[in-house]
Amino acid sequence: MSFTVRDSGDMRRIARELGRMDDKELKKRFRKELRKAAAPLVPKVRASIRRIPSKQRYTPDGLRGTLARATRLEVKTTGREAGVAIRVDGRKMPAHMKSLPSMVEGKKRWRHPVFGNREVWVDQPKQPYFYNVVRAAGPASRRAVYRVLDGISRDIS
Image 1 (cartoon, rainbow, N blue to C red):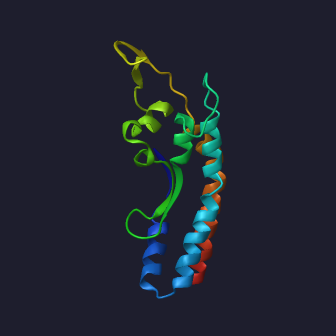
Image 2: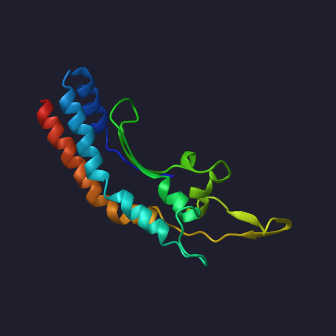
């Protein structure tokens, strides 16, 4: 599950121009500023995960802790997929929990046996934690990313 900040090709165009240039410092600054612009979203998503209601107290090694640890910021400045993404990465989850980020959010059905009894199954209710937070905080981060793009494009030209 991820939320990506992309625009109509500006990110790709700037990444392409930076690729043609030999200025490693400018490339490094571009990545650093993009990361800084989108970074405030990661703690907000993690806090939202920790607030998911549960009958058990929060523990770092429980489901909510595992989801919070799998939340990360991804910045790509090369290729067709150039962009900034906030991701709750299923690949960072334990082997038997890879699809849980989507299930907890409610994008997929989440059902499981009751205490391991495969004769009795229950549907787990969804607990949206990602898109509501990103939707609320996204415009400010998007504006920050656009400011970075404008600044770097001025430096390139």
